[in-house]
Length: 318
Image 1 (spheres, rainbow, N blue to C red):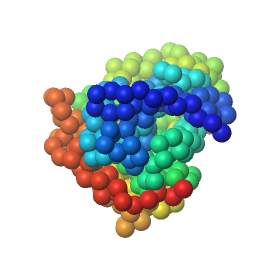
Image 2 (image 1 turned 30 degrees about the vertical axis):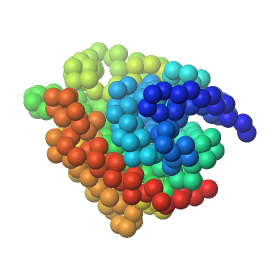
Image 3 (image 1 turned 180 degrees about the vertical axis):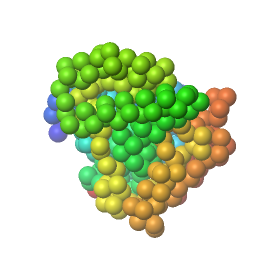
């Protein structure tokens, strides 16, 4: 299989554009190389949920800069149907995205001749990189960044509970009951027209209003409903048990989207202890940023740089 790669230079680094063909789409991405190390080891970064691009809006660039400063090359891709990639992001569940990530690692390693590689996944991307490593991605380590250690259903129910804090007990009960029923419909693969009618029923008007008020995750169309049904009960614990490479899992202590305590417990129960490093950073939110959004939690970028730096001399599987 051939990969389409074109190069251009910037002041600080070499950036190469790469297109990875998949059976039903093409994934467009970039590889950034530190100038001093043209055959540098590689970190492939996978973004979070939704129509995320290779920069994961503004999250990835400063992390990428720190990786580059340690002498590592960095690659990331637009999700299906985003930016330069073809297809539709709603067509790929966790397993589908993991298969994309495996292909992207192989393509990028071949493009730059990297002997070592690792995966970094943010939020939903944490599930993805775990699954990719379990499915044979040629990497020597994994980093999950706010990557839930529980299923999407458990994570979304936690986020809903967090959003309902401060509301009346009646609102909490109504909102949680509606979300539980909605996710049960998803797990049963209930057709979208029936679900749309269920949500529009006057008996659920108050529940839908409450969920809308808190910005809860409620699929709004057939494509997003299909994706929800495909991933709602994805269980990351199976991939954790299959993991054979080191993993760093990082959380912000103030994360209201992911159940940090339950996730840490899950990683500790299911990942081999000799492979696992856990960090929970005070002051960090879901993006590991501080409450005033002026920067990352103290020590965050240094933690990442130290971790990947410690992997520099360890070849990855071919």
